[in-house]
Image 1: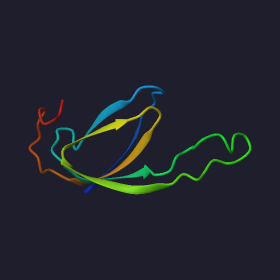
Image 2: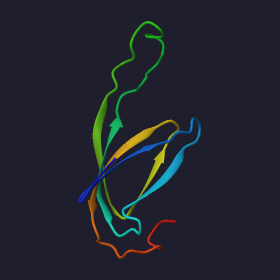
Image 3: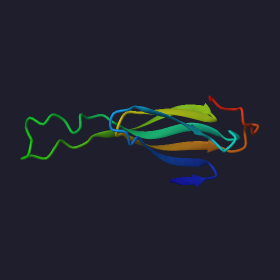
Image 4: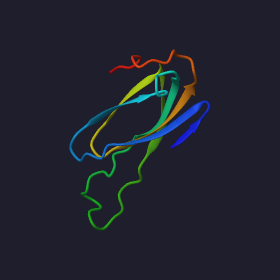
Length: 107
């Protein structure tokens, strides 16, 4: 989505309707960069909630979210997405701190 000298923003989407997927996000084509802190938005409410009270007649409860963050401190980040879910990651990026290599990864 966006790339600057000190920031990488990506949107990841799992299009599967029944399979959880894992994806590895790498800082640089050869792992030469490093991710610092990763920020994302997490759901804190039950959504869409139970169908009991609003099935066909009422709007679902408002979706409640909060911004969360984790320290990555690595050239790689593994994300596990449940079926039909998406996540937007805002990654602090330190450029050219690792030696470029084909063999830097968790692969």
